Length: 423
Image (cartoon, rainbow, N blue to C red):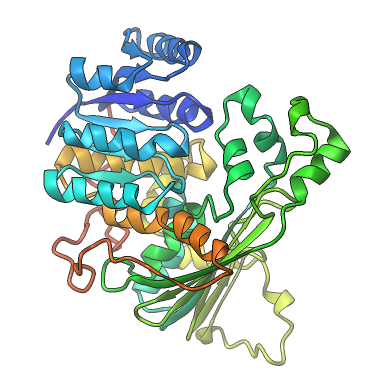
């Protein structure tokens, strides 16, 4: 086991600015190299590390310089969507484990290249999907593992978040969404919704995605936003956007379950991941913060469901995941309610111990593939698309099951491993 991880950090956009602070605060991690293709952002990263640690990291605008010149134990990639996999693959070829921020992918060839690079080199890749470590998601996972849901038959998920301003200021802020919304039409951000669902349904661990069908609405929201609010970049007035305002994606699983995903980011919607889990013995509903099991003694046909909204506290008392019990006792830190810290600790523990990460390369491939596959389905009139088996058949009987405190395949109470490691 490594006592101290030397980490390289690439990308200083919105997520990168936040994550790097989390790593710097961890006593068993040292950020020794930073990179951003924009010189001012690279300078900002260098200054931040020096301010918080007193040490000056290696700085570059070309990530390949880090591979050539630095001794590191892991790299964290927080660039735009289009560069996640090319950068990750180059570091994996150099024998360096990768933690990558979330997002879709450009094409299936890149995903297969990622998977095959891992299989050939044995170097691990972990998607840093923080929503897998959300409190409600882990409570539901815990309940599913204990059998409280009976058989899970269907799951809803989504990314509903009004991002009009972020999209339309893409050129000024060097934000990657704008060009995607002009040129593509797909579920471009599926992993926040699908990551926790995939673990609940044992995807790549006895189950897998079989087929996908996607349908897109027309694209009118961004133009309407411009008409009402104006836009700094005048070239966007009258711009034709290809990305539909609402994309619905349906997935069928090998074990018979279905999944419905919704992407809605260019209309005035409330933020929600629409996390709803349907089991034969229980139902979880995110929007109403409610949970029902057959043991509740509630007659749902006769009793108004509204009477049982906002009842999750009683279930947290019984079924809160062990790491969230510990986290709440320690005092929840910043970052989406704490799940950012947990997913980063999961990555750190995996690298320190040389073990399979809880969201591994096969999981990442399955999640990222939603983007090109949904694009393909939409372009072909919402025709069903076959989902590749990235595990090469190993999903039936996985060779290695990720275990441990941060496992998403099992629920284990391991208080000896601290979520806040001591100095």
